[in-house]
Amino acid sequence: MARTPLLSSSIGRRVRRLWRQYGIFWLGAIAVGLIAVYYARLIDVGYNAFLHLQNEHRWLTLLLTPAVAAVSVWLTRRFFQGAEGSGISQVIATLHSNTSAAGMRLLTFPILIGKILVSFLAILGGFTIGREGPTVQVGAALMFNLRRLYPRSNAQIERQLVLAGAAAGLSAAFNTPLAGIVFAIEELTRSFEARASGVLITAIIIAGIIALGFNGNYTYFGTIDIGTHFPDSLAVAVVITGIVTGIAGGVFGWLLLNTQRWIPEPLRRLNSERPVAFAALCGLVIAVIGLVSGGTTFGSGYAEARGLLYGTEQLSVFYPLLKMASMIGSYLPGIPGGIFAPSLSIGAGFGNVLHMAFSDMQLPMLIALAMVGYLAAVTQSPITSFVIVMEMINGHALVISLMATALVSSRISGMFAPPLYEALANRYMTPSAAESVAGAQEEEDVSSAGQSETRSEAKE
Image 1 (cartoon, helix red, strand yellow):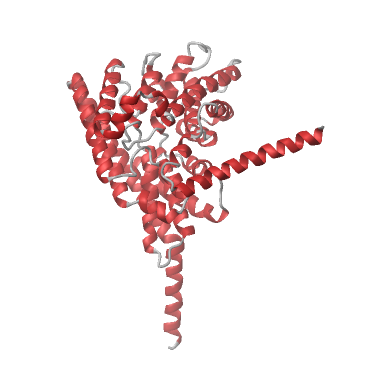
Image 2 (image 1 turned 180 degrees about the horizontal axis):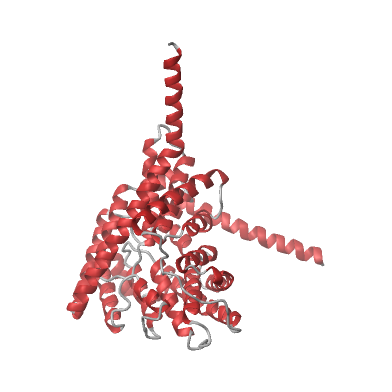
């Protein structure tokens, strides 16, 4: 009889240990999957409402979009500072600095709520934004706040929670589990810790199962049929597509990171002194571009990209440039919203244009290459880019071509601007953290240069 209390105590300790090791992560992954599903549905409801209004009252967007921009920026600056932009930069800043301190600034519950609500408001105004980047920050914020369930949280636990939440968010948003893993390795951490691998993969699997349970087994853009015969011009098309999308994505990154060099000084002063008015002006530009394009530049661009892939959409050759301009106008004011889906849409537009030069190739094949190329150019994460698109279109037959295009475009883009998310992340880090990251990069460059010099001297 005396052994019963001891046995109960031992079982209780084991249960608590299992809860801390696995249960909290599983609970968080389930919550991330649920939020990703319902957030996607919320964004769809908002955009459908905008489309209905735009179809009924076409010119009303000239008033609606600037008004929504002004309200969105006011809300973000007044109540949800840290929710602006895609959210991936905030997650990178959290992982590359003091996770606890940065998380309490950038991954709070108010920011989580604000990210969802303000991005919903922005899509109601027709802004060129996606939901995938915000889902990454929402997933990271949700998991980070689960640290409160640990009796003694530490930096390692908090880092694992943030990383798992972010990767699970991307996986559930796109239904791309492999991309979630690669995204965590290539974009968020630039490394892979063995002790975090099981936690990360488990979170992605659980969030993916939740998304599949609600949405069914689907691919983001469906399955394209490219057959087994590849044209002789494929290699040339890969290189040309990589160069074109690399230049376009590099210019886009340069424009976002060097606003002081191309935006006129009066507008910069307006943004600094009266950000709400500047946002309204950006909204007006987005509305005008939308009207000029026949409404195709509003929203994330998912419908346009899918329509091009399946031959149900006819777009102007100017579509990718107009979409780029609209995305820049959506991003400059600091409104919550991602760039993944719009980038894929812009890439699809470039693929449509390149089809005029490579008419012997199937249009879906060129569009897939250009989507990978432009996304890789914007993010400078080639592996994540080709894995995402490969899973989105079930395009395993194109894997080598997708990889080659992503590598070419990311290299070309690097000549114009540094990796976008990392550069933006520096703005959210404390000065010491940003300097340490920059110092590490500089030390790596010096080390590489030194090794090259040593090899040259050895050859001599």
